[in-house]
Structures are given as structure tokens and as C-alpha cells.
Image 1: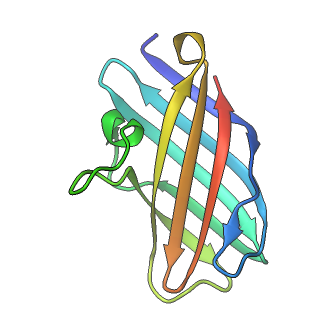
Image 2: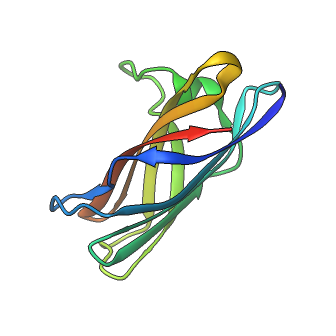
Image 3: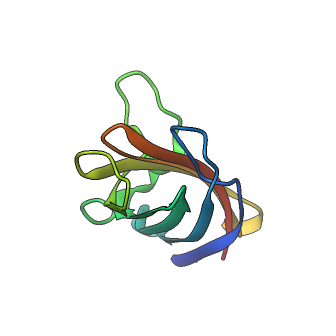
Length: 130
């Protein structure tokens, strides 16, 4: 197994800073196990009438940054960037994601994500399979 694509199978409702629950419309993740990189992380969610779109910031990201727990001074997951409208906070959409693989030969993935724009933001957790 060199390349794998993971698609959404279940999730918590993405929740904004005001506690509003929404819908994770889609989440797709690509992994290259040979180069040890996350090649794609595409997310679309709607919370309280605001649609959030996010993807990898700056191209492929280190798989170890995605899977390793944060330690003092260490990487904070993989970086995400994107857009949101309407009702976004001031500034660009930025965020991060972390995850782990499950099952025989990494058949599944569990990931958490967080996005923010100014004082607005969302968080959530999802399960994916290949």
C-alpha cells in the first residue's frame, strides 16, 4: 500500500465557538505511505449558516506531524487554510488537523480538526475509511 484515499463514514457535529452544532458535509484525506505524507485534506462544513472550506496549507504535510501527539515545542498537527462565508471573523481561515490510523493495514482513520477566523471557529472529529 503506497497511496490511500480516505472518505467520511461518521463524525461528531462540527461545533462553533458559540456552541452551535452543524454538519460536516465532506472530508477527504489522501496519504502517501511511501513518502510518509498527507497529500490531501479537504473539508467542508456548515455551522449556524456559515460554510467553512479548508484544505492543506502549503502542499504535502508530514505524516508524523499528523499522527504524533503534541509535545511542548513540537508540531501542532498539519496546517489547514481556507475560506468561510458568511459570518466569518476578521482575518483568514487557518487551522490544524491530527489523526491516527485504525484496523488492519490502515483501513480506517480517526481525525480531529479545528478552524478559526478571527473570533469565530469550529472543531470536530471524524471517522474515515479507504
